[in-house]
Length: 185
Image 1: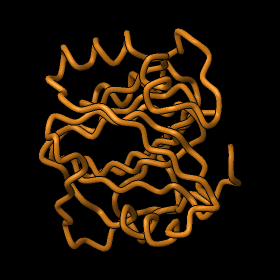
Image 2: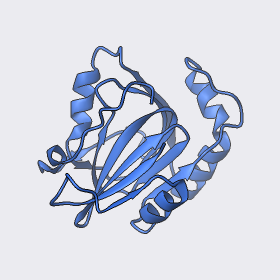
Image 3: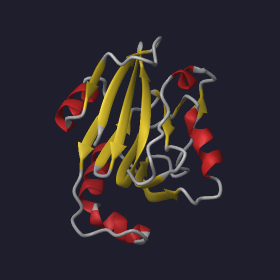
Image 4: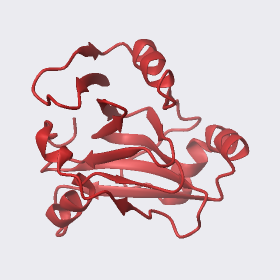
């Protein structure tokens, strides 16, 4: 189940707000400039499907976002617990960073934890299958795929180079909960 927990940036132990209702999550994040939606596939998608098949199943929503946001590139990323570089990849995304463009992710399968450092708050968003999150450009954030990653996500980019991060050097991410969910949840 998708979840939003909001923390004061000074206290990663006790959330000041928690929601698991999708509409409530979308409302709270929307008030902070973050898009959060639910998508449904127009055709069945199965594990191991090609990038083209996955994109085709969500083409209507992808086209809508491309028209609204000027996105030029769409791809599919898939990471499983058996990936030989999973620990290195996890560590890379755990440090607070920003991007010069929105970071748009749609979870076709699996889950991951985005933490957004907005003002004096940290909004921790557990994204699961069917969730789309769009982290606005220049928003400080980090992503945790967990120690046993299991997800398939569609990514949209304006910059054809794809994922380009500017790391802040702040240690804040280490002061907040990690995603330790079992694989596949």
